[in-house]
Amino acid sequence: MRMKFNNSSRLVLVSVASLLVATLVTACSQLTQTLTVDFVFVASSKAAGANNDGEINVFEINSESGRMRQIPSSPFPSGGRNPVAEAVSADYGSLFVANHDDNSIVQFVVGTDGKLYPYNTVNTPGIFPLALAANKSNLFVVDTYQPLPICSTADPCTGSVSVYPLSAGTSSTPAALGTPAANSAVGGNYWPLNLSGANASHIIVPTGVNVLASGSYVYVTAYDSSVTPTVGYVFGFAVGSGGILTPLSGSPFAAGTQPSAIASDASSAYLYITDYAKGNILAYTVAGSGSLTPLNGSPFRAGNQPSAIAVDPAYPFAYVTNSQDATVTAYSVSNGALRSLGNYTTGQQPVAVGIDPSTERFLFTANYLGNNVSGFTLSTTAGTLLESQFSPYPSNAQPTAVAAIPHNGTGGGVQKP
Image (cartoon, rainbow, N blue to C red):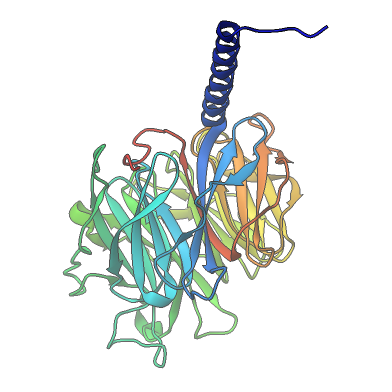
């Protein structure tokens, strides 16, 4: 038997169906927004096309599965060649990207949907920027060489660190990137990472930078390339008003053979440095004066060629990528001491590691030769890792750095269309 509907009945059915579709679309949209817990920015040194500029892949993290998926507009141009380092402003409204081959820092405004909008580009005081760190007051930039005409690729010399003061952003304007602080003690807008005495002419190669959560001290890892085997150092500075740096008493401090990465804990009580050549982690206690003392039991064993380290700000765990092994090692942290919890497989040659700032329970690594990103969910009670759904995730070629912001977190980005 065929059922017949009059026009009024048909209109009612159409209205109900339309309402149902609209409700489902709205629910799905709200669910998607709710489940996106963070945005992760992955710098890749090679673009997909003929353009020589690097690119930034933007991933969203699903809060239930940990799955990472690129947002529809990703990737975005990095604004220069060979991006190698990233940092986010304390209000999560800006992403700073160091483009190594252009001697430039590009500031992007981060939209509430994770999209990147170029806002400002500055040249660094020195040559070939390689590391960044930021807090609410300053952006710290490490250059491979000091400025021309002091140094050049043909006549290399020791590296340097500079500080760009940051003014606070608002809901409609991003944090403003000021001019580098003038360090009158050296007569310029940078501080050279020099040794003294008989080694004053040695070439010091910087590798990383970390500013304590307290903001009082900043540390730069480096090694002396003029000797064989190389000798590692960490240069410590007190951070004054306007970003003026003052070397700490006893700086530089001994730091193994070839330090490759540096991180500190949320309490600013401990500092950790990976030694690429020795395959271990150096741990230090940080005194009130900023001076460093090796922790009892240090160094702690890592894998082969450790390349990056992240310390969870909310839970007592640390994670180190081992570039030769294609693994990440998990550690428990007790009074600064590290205890290995096991190794977990990543993509080929991991060179950067990060922890999501929203829940502090999702971890990701940039895998340089794998051309991908590995994602993990970490146990907040045990520190162990579980590979996220569908990991690893494809990125552009040769990813080099990672940074992340919470989705709709505090100061979660200037509103953009």
